Length: 118
Image (cartoon, rainbow, N blue to C red):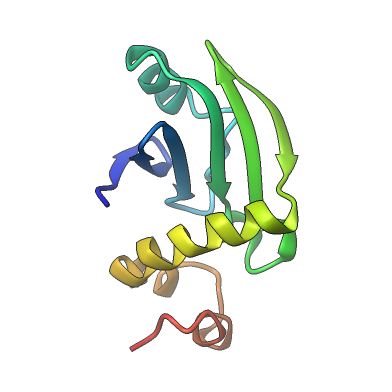
C-alpha cells in the first residue's frame, strides 16, 4: 500500500477507494484544497474514508466518511463496521509512520494502547 502526502493528509488509493490519514493537528478535510484538487485531477467520484486521529485523538468519532464528486460532501461519523475497515488500514499506515503519532498531541499511553509502538 502506497501513501502520498497531499496537503495535511496522507492518501492511499486502494482499488477504487480513497483513504485519508491526518498528517497534522491542523488537518481539515473541508479546508484542504490540495486534496480536493488531487481528487478532481484523477477524476475520482465516490466514497472517502478518513482517520482524523491527529486532530481528534483516539476518540471513537475519529473515523469519518465523505463523498467526493467535484467537491467533498456528506462528511459523517463512520458506523462501527466502516470504522473497523478504516482502522485496519490506519494500523498499517501508522505502524509505518509511528513518528507522526510520537510527534502529535497524543500521549505515550494513547499510542501504546493503539498497539503500534515498538
